Each structure stands twice: as C-alpha cells, then as structure tokens.
Length: 470
Image (cartoon, one colour):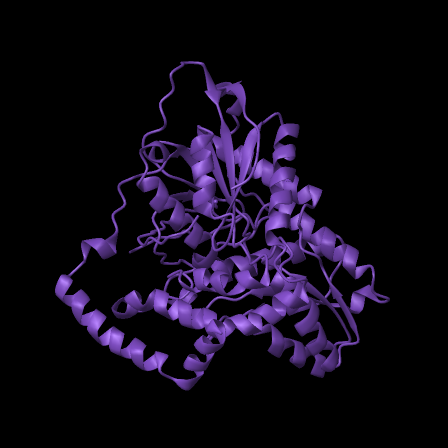
C-alpha cells in the first residue's frame, strides 16, 4: 500500500498512486444529450487540467494513500485497453458526465436509514481489521442513537436536505454549459448515501450506451471519505462488468486549484464583504468539513494540505483585488470521541470573539451546495455562538450552487479531461479476499459477537432501540 506524491510548484504536474481495495453496496442518476463528432473534435493541446498561479510558497507534503490510479494533477485515468472503434476517422460518440455527491435525506423518515448508509461505509468509520465485520451492526447502532438530533437539524431547514434538487440543477446547468462549447453530453447524478444512488446512475449509463465517461466529484478537495469512497464504489462496479471495464473513463479527483473556482469564490467573498459598513475590518472565516486526524496522519489523506492550499489561492486572488482582510481556517462537523482536524469551528468562534473581533464573514469552503452543514450548522448554530461570543456583525458567503462562472469552469474541466479517458483496469485484486483465513474469521466472529452483545445491552442503547421501534 505504498504511494508516492511529488511536490507541487506552480502548475507542474504531480502524480499520486491511489489504492482502493474494499467494496460496499449502494445505487442511481439524472440527465440528457448525445451527438456524432469526429475524434478531431477532441484534439486539444496537452496541458495540465488544473492551472493556477505560481505556488512556490505552498508545499504539498508527500502522502501515502490506499488507492492505486495514475493521476495527473487531479485528473485520474484508468490505464488499460481503450474501447475499440469500428470506424477509423469518424465514430459515434456518446459522452457521459457523472457528478458524484454525498446525498441527503429528503424527509425526516429518511434520516435514520441515510445515517446508516453513511456510517456503514468503511471509509467513514475505519475499524481495525479485527473488528470490520462489526461495521454494519455499529452503523445501525450509531444511526439509531444520532437520528433524533439529526432530525431536529433537518426539521429546522424545512424537513429534508435540498442537496438532490441543487445537484440536479447543477447537472442541467453543466449540460447546457457543455452544449455552449459544442459538446453534447448526458449528465448523470450519483449520490453515495441516498437516492439517486451511484449504482443507479451507472445502470442508466449502461442503458444509454455511453462510449466515454468523465467522472466529476462535486468535492473541490480530495478526501478518502468523500471522493475516495465514491471512486472505490465505481471501481468495484466497473471491475465486475464486462461493458464498463472497457469504457474509457477519466476521473477528476480534485479541482480546488482551478482558476475559475478560485475566482468564483473570490467574487462571492468580495460581494458579501461589500455589505458590511466597514469591509476592511471584517474577519474572513473559512469553515471546512473536518475529517479525523488519523485519516491524514495514518492513511495519508491529502485533504488538509489541499484545503490550506485552496485558501492560500483564494486569499492571493483577493489580495490582487486590493482586499487584504485577516482570515482564518477552522473545521466543523466532527462526530464521536476521536480527534478531528483542528482548530474546531465552534472553539475558534469563541476565541476570536473574546479577542475583540466584531465583524465576521463565514465562508463554507468545502461545500458547493447548500445543505445541513451550511443551512443549520453554520447559519443557526455557529451564528448564534458567534453573536454570544461578542461578534456584532455576521455575514455568510452562499455556496456556489449554479454560479455561472463556476459551472463554466466545471465544463472546461470536463472538456480538458476528455482526451485522457481510458478503460478501467480490471486487474486490481481485493486484498481482504486474498488474505481470507477461515479460522481467523471464526475467532473474530466469536469475540466480536460477544463485544457487540455487551454493547447492545447498555441501557442507553436499549432505550434508543425501543424508542425507534415504538
């Protein structure tokens, strides 16, 4: 499970080896469009998909990741046999773009099963090998315990997540942006933990007989728990299907460095700063979704490095516009007793309030759509905490949504990724299956079952299950 990452300076290409070895269940899609065009339509210049200002002051640490792909600055192609053409010069191309996102419960009744799907993902709760067979029982336990509080949050924002609606709108906007570039494509939506599931989107891609696919996760920065988890599911599905295993695919692993994204974020920040009486005194407060520290330090997740680099780029763009406000970064949405990336958003808000900061502009930096983390956690919980801590003037930058500059830049990223699409390799073996030992498995089942039984007998758990059933 070794990986090598080269340092990034300016727009130099760097490579990371990623390895996905586990598999898990799920499913779904949305979209439209296709056309005939010649291979020459996609003859673009060779260039890095992600370009930006010189980053000589920003160092990207070498990381070890459990993934295996050949990547060029955020664009990942699967090197194997390219799907064969029946024509030498002009072929019928049916281009597909698959947008990947988290998904969210659409009603309050969806909350507990959504949480179960989330915590049943081994990339979300990373259990030791000895206890991995407890993944689903533990997910059931946590989802039942957390559902009441989560339901309160979703009830506060209207009774469900708006993520599906917004992502569908982004898919339609991206399709139209591609059409404006004379590229017709079917744009699909695949959610990781709720409808429309990724598996359903893949089934529709097969039915539509797509001949080339670009996978675009709607997470600007790469993390094992977001993009990594979704790509692992795709790898499993493609490996098991003869048609999909030959389908040329290009995956855009991250796009936080793209100038269109940086400019879009800077535009939104500049606009919101203008609403304050004294814009120059406003603290720009970047709040990113957190991940456990172990993901970064033990699993080699590049998320923290990419987040810090992303904020550096945005602040450099603002500085070029004459905006030199103080800024800070904190991480929100931590869950459970483990240590997460610091500093924590709630703690920093109290601290800067005590230091005398009176005006603050919150910027949700890892979110491109409004959902519970922005609408409830930031707009309600953190705003209330900030005002209690002495901050008098509060503002919040909206998520990008269907911002025209942002969508156009995503369309550019898709076009740039097309020439590098190649077929998914079916050679990756599942390490866990290769290391299967029946005796060891029985021992783990025996002792793990005892542990699970003891946990399930605790009064709090019994009460939670009783309340969920009656």
